[in-house]
Image 1 (cartoon, protein in one colour):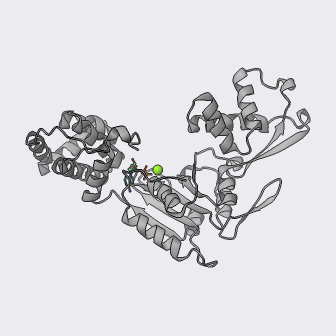
Image 2: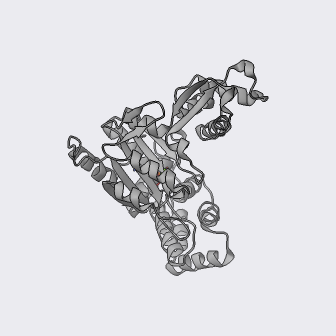
Length: 360
Ligand SMILES: Nc1ncnc2c1ncn2[C@@H]1O[C@H](COP(=O)(O)OP(=O)(O)O)[C@@H](O)[C@H]1O
Ligand SMILES: [Mg+2]
């Protein structure tokens, strides 16, 4: 279950989605069980999916899609059980991963266990488990007599009734994988596993999150799109909301400075889009820039390192962004706001960055 951190601010999207899900909770026909959040990177899609977990008291979990995803990533894998005496792997690391796998009951929990035991991140552990699964799947049949089925995280969430965030399914290349995903999201769905048929838990909610389809980014598969019963277009939040989130996240309390910085971000975002510049000036850049300025960094210098170079390092594109900023005089406004900043002893509110390591 996700617990809302003190920095969490309920957004209008969160209220709307929660109300809609609640409204149809007991309806068989009209239940909202698949939601699409599409839009700007950093606009709060993941945070919203997690907030639903807190609002409904359901566990949150996620699957991060990748280009080479195959069916075993959607359903799970049926793997041979090989005894340690067989010394199938020569390397110690593989043997270790194998032993973790055998004592886990799904691929995700295997990654969790591996991450805990080896001190690596969940994502790294998932990669390692996935690689081992690939090897085991290719093993000739005669090498093993026994098999064990490891359900995917999608299957686990589906069966146990979790909130499942499906991140960026647009990147998946294999159409068959998208079809498998699509049929798993059917409202009355069942998933045929090699070992059994499982039924969709009535609490299961899938939240598909995808960044806006800018140039070069594939749109979300039509069939998947059609599957959702509620969709939100996620934008860079309104200026005041940006300021509130930055205050909560960084602990920096200067409303005036944060407001001008938010205006700079909004302007850069608009200018990047209007000029077909691919990068994003969004909430994450804003937080890190605000945090640097709050800690005494030079605002213009930090603007480059925290915001502009994240959008682009192409000199012509940088010049376009600089011209836009100059035409609005925002940087001068920012400098004078900083010069006039009262040299307060309490720059930070009580919940500063120290209490809040998650800057996103
Ligand atoms: N409602 C909110 N209140 C406070 N902070 C938020 C909220 N929504 C998002 N954030 C913060 O903004 C950053 C980006 O949000 P995230 O959900 O990861 O964006 P996305 O998934 O759209 O890329 C994170 O640091 C997150 O904690
Ligand atoms: Mg996200």
